[in-house]
Structures are given as structure tokens and as C-alpha cells.
Image 1 (tube, rainbow over the protein chains, first blue to last red):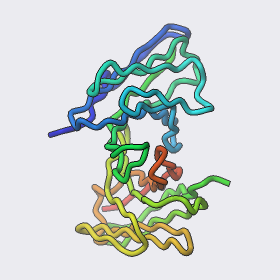
Image 2: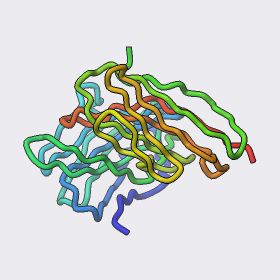
Image 3: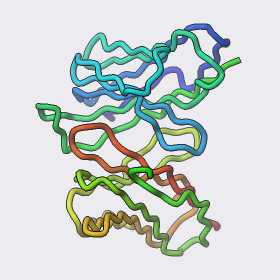
Image 4: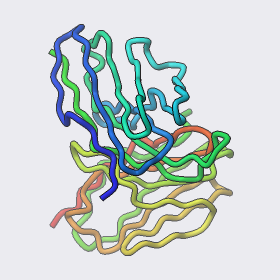
Length: 117
Length: 110
């Protein structure tokens, strides 16, 4: 089945040690999103790619970066993870029909649960 | 004020009950409305997607949107223990990413 796949499902890293989370999709969607979800909270958008165009949310810390080398893959890099960055990180995709407008829903992966020691 | 408000629950019902989950929103520009189901330690799964005011039915699930009162509902008929999850409502203008409610945790007792 076409889907959004996140790896790894669980990631443990040390305080301050850089970590990379990955997302791949077989839906051929042109928009990819990264969300942070903390326990019992709604997902919070960090940034998204519209094709290769990167769109950062105003309140996303500089500690978070992203790369999208091609349509299928997107990475989330956390340069110096702090204890407050422990969360579930969700990747989502959608189809945008152009000019930044979409009437299509987003499809999510199962997330990567990040723990900080 | 949050753009999408949702009662966090938890909501506990017996098996077979009709469940009503509700959200309100404040942004008149929202055009698209979604319900996602999220099981523990999994990503949100799209359940229902609606555009206009009115009802949309899919099996045991009915999504209802009332744009005049900015009210979104999800009804689950003949609820099952497997429906136990967190339900997230989400709204979308069409030009930005989703705005989620905080989620309602549902527990269906066998």
C-alpha cells in the first residue's frame, strides 16, 4: 500500500547530540510536513516543503532543520537536542494543486518517538 | 483563544453506545474539516474529510459540519472497543497546514 514511512520508530539520543529522523513516502505527494506532538497535545507544525521550497513556522526553534533531497524523502535534523525536545515527531504529506492551494487532506506516518537522555 | 477547541475528555462509553465528539472553531476562513483517529504510539489516521456544511457518512461514522455556528461533530454508531483511541478534529483554509484540536480520548468499555 502507498504510505508514509518514518524511521526509526523509536530514537534515543543524548542531550546535545545531533539526531536525524527520516520520512519517505510512496504517495508521490508534493508537500511534506513535520509536526511535533508532545504527550496529550495536538500536533504542532514545525515546517513544510512545497516541492523544494522550504517553509518554516515562525515559532520553530533554530535547533530544528530539515532537508528534502527528492520528492520521496524528507529529513528532520535536531542539531542540539534538549530535554524539551523529547516528543513524537510526525511526518505528513499532501497533494497541492498549485499556487499554494490544496483541497486534499494530509496523510501521516506512524511517527518517531524521540527520547533524550 | 485557540482556533480549534476540543474537549479533551476522557470519554468512557459502553460497547454499542452512540458516541458524539465535538469541536468548535473560530476562523471563518476554514473550509475543510477532518477527523483523525490516533491510537497510542501511532500516527493520526484520516477518518473523515468534509468540505461544506452538512453530513457525511462512512460506515459507522458520520461527520457533521455547521459553518454557521462553527461547529464540527463526529458520531460513531455501535461503538466497539477497537474504537478506543484519541480523536483529533482538524480544520484547514486550503493555504496552510492543518489546525488541530487538542484531541478527545475515547474509551469504549466491553
